[in-house]
Every structure is written in structure tokens, then in C-alpha cells.
Image 1: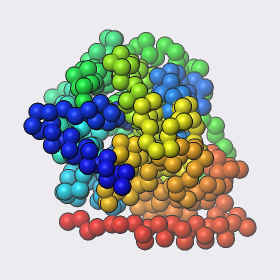
Image 2 (image 1 turned 60 degrees about the vertical axis):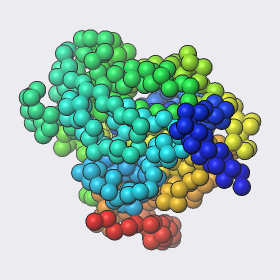
Image 3 (image 1 turned 180 degrees about the vertical axis):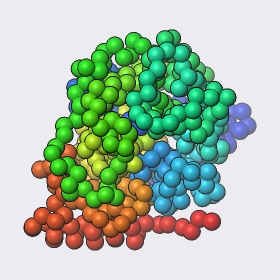
Length: 493
């Protein structure tokens, strides 16, 4: 009854606004500021334990919100992950299981509302700034185009064209891809997976993330008088690793600490579980090159963090912090040399786990959240598709029936609460089931990895063939099969 009343009030306000009237409830409905970083590992953030990378603005957001330590994407690749979290559905349920399938999103979603569309249809101003749905980086950024966007999600949308790999400055290619240096072309140049580094000579004003922050700041000021859903996509630290020179100075490559190496680490990882790695990238036996990757990655993260700070400062300057729900996450995790893996497309922890922070303002107080003070850490298992129903719940909107995520309102009230027994991730036909104690990885060829995440959180010992673990593996297999059988998957034509 309460939810119906709130929804009716919102609908009534929309009708009034159509006739030029405003409603007092407009000042009570919360704003949503959703910031998503691209290819960001939780392992790179200071608030998640990194001792070298400096991320003061994301850390400050975590200090006033809830930081989820065990949040998982639904597919560790940009397009599927973003389609999943914006629809509130698993990647195979929305029919986007690869970057190339991102263009199918609009037809597959049909007349069901995306996350931002739910708010737009209820009277919120909804805007996309830069990459929210899939964009090819760097191609769609250098071209300044929408990519396979979902137009119905937005009142307005803004792209941030930038030079990316041809930024003026010091250039270095650390891996072995064959690159084409053609400024008249945007695609099939080889930069999308290359560790290509640019130490920019400017202050960064020409870069996509600075432009995105500029536009976000402008929109916050312009629309501060009515509720807004502002989605801001920051493309760093996605390759190419571009940042102004000063952001590299705190990270001299000689001082970068590489991920630990364990002798025989790959001996119990099936071939289908081997991700992009040093051997294939030309980084094997090149510790200085690996350290340069870390240096450039951290510089890109710090540059992105600075833009987060600028956007959050604008909220404060316009007096909007208390009535705004801020969400920060990445689309998926990222390997930085763990297991000698690099980048994404892996079911291992560093690739599947994401940073995820929700900070409701002081005036955002649905039932049971009255005592919320922030600075909370939750170890509850959550998924990125839980974002959609959580924001709907916080704003008093009805959660649509197609949404497969779980509202995290109970976890915001009590960080020890559980809304699911396990988190799930799909990748290249393989599956991860992450429970309280176990990580169960079943690859597309049926090969399995099993890790005790309490005794072995870095996943160095695959227990699937170790005596005494057959019962655990069998139970997790049945749990995964039940999860897949219960997933609502339509036939997408």
C-alpha cells in the first residue's frame, strides 16, 4: 500500500508537470547520480586495500556510504555487463553475451523499462554522459558517437569525443599487438586490448573523462531544481592508458609492486580457464614492462578518481548531497598480473569482482533507513543487477517484474544481512558460482575449478580433485544447475 501510494504520487506529479505545474513532492524525490568506471579492478582502489594507488575521492564516497566487498558483475566484458545491470537481467536473459551483441539490447528489452528509463517514465530528468551502455574504446570515443545505445533510457544523451591514443605526449607500447596509426580511422586499429601508454602533455582538458565531468557538473547545476537520474560513464582506466603527466609522478614504475607469483600456479587451472596472460601479451620475463603497466594503470585510475571528485564537489556546491543517492561501480574487474593474467574475460576473483559503493544522502530515508550514517562495509554477496531494484526501492518506485536482481535495501539497513546465497557470473560459456565460502568455476568444456575462499582467497589451489572435496563440488554443481534452470531466458530472434 505504501509503495502504491508513493508511485501514485509520482505519477500525479508527472501529470501536473505536463500542464506546467510543479509539485512539492519534486523536492522530496531523490536524485540519482550513477558513476561507472571502465575496466576498474577493486584491487586498485585504496578503500579496497591497495597500498600504492591513491583514490581519495572514491575513498571519501565509501566513507559516507556502503562499500560492498563481495560484489560481482554478471559478465566480465563491457557490453554484456552494462546491458545486464541496466536491464536488471542476467546477460543470457537479456541476450547480450558479447560486445558484438550489444546492438541487440533495444529489441530484446522491448517495452520493458531499463533502470534509468524507469525513473524517466516516473518524471525524473534522465541523462547519459559518455559510456553507460557499450561503447568501443577507443574507437567510439575518437569518433564521438553513441555506440549501441538505448535511446529510450534518456531524456538527453551526450558523447565526449577525445583523442585517446593520439593524445599529444610521451607514447609507449608495452605489449605485442600490431597497431595501425591512422587518425582518419577509428576501428580495427588494435588499441582496444593493447597496453598502450600516453603520458599527456596537457592538463587533460581534451580527455573524455574531463569532458564527462564538465558536462555532469553543468547538468547538475541546470537540473538541480527537479529530480534527476544522471548516469556518468568514465572510460579510464580502460586502455589506452592515457593520463596527464603529473598523474604518473606518484607511480614511478621501479617502485610498483607486482602481484605475487606462485610456482606451478597454472598446473591445476584447466586450459579453458587460462585468460589473457603475460606469455601471449609479450610481458613474460619482462618485470619492468609489467611494472610500467601498473604505473600507467594507477595513473589512469587516479585521473579518473579526480573527475569523480569534481562531480561530487558540484553536488555539494549546489546543496544536493543530502537528497542524492550516489552509486559508484565498475562494469567488471580486471587482472593486473594475478596468476600472470592481464585484463578481463576471466571467472577468477580479480576479473569477476567489482568495486560497488552506494551512498544515500541524509534525506533519503525509506522505511528502516532512518539510522543510516554511512561509512559501512558489507561482506554480503551481491550482484550488479541488484543496483536496479535497490535504486527503485530507495526512490519508492515499483520494481518491474522483469528485473532479476535483488533489492539491497535490507543490506543498507543491516550490512550483515544476506539477500542471496550465491553470486553468479557468466563468461564465454563458463559459469562462476560464488558462495559464502566457495568459488566454483565451471568452464565451457566442463572443466572445473574449486577454491576455498576462506583458506585461499587468492585462488592458488584448485581443490576439485583434492581428496575430501567431492561432496562440496557435487553440491555446488547442483546449486549452479538449479540457478541456470531457474533463470528466465527468452528466445531472442
